[in-house]
Image: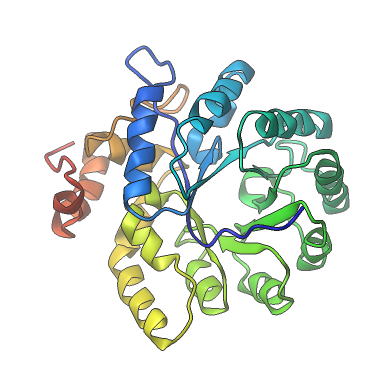
Length: 308
């Protein structure tokens, strides 16, 4: 398989629900159009932002089937295919491949806290079994397993592995990976608490795999643009510092509680969180709304900016 690289903003979309708590595919079409019009390069469905652990297996399959039909020209649609075992993940990836996915993102199976050597082999087994571009999500805050750059660089030799998303707080890990110049898209989480966006982009990263683009798609596209010179660095600094309060708001609660609460308050058709998750209080949401108002973002996107 020829490797295809994602560059720019890779937005992990929320899963919209209607008033009955069912997946709202009409709303999703609106959200996809919002991303397409504002410079998003790729979207991830069924990532942690999309509440996948609260969806049934049948719902996850329907998400793939229905949203793949909505893909606009020039965008890539990837799907979270993480599961509880190697066999389940392979089945998930094969289903995605058969139903229009451009690729799949995989984290280590949750809860089992597997040794890193076992997870390295897990990724190889999945990559060998499925003919679909794959992304590795190194996300120890969610799954505990934490791959070292040596393991990652070995995995990046596999022709089916094309994307890496880093969610540790180790700048040195990102530096070692980029110094080796693997044939993958090296991206990072947009959490300001991890502090990876600035060093990843400065060291030659290819973009961010983010959730903030759900509300700030053009702004995240701007700070996710790979640098080619001093002008890019200066533009990045200005936009990143402007957006920093919103990034902190989005990570003020476990993903996707804060961003989905604020999206709903801004008038985007996302519905409620699925229980047991609950939205932020009106007072908490007001903190995000104040940024939307004062930054001019509400006016630019036509968001609701009244009280929560």
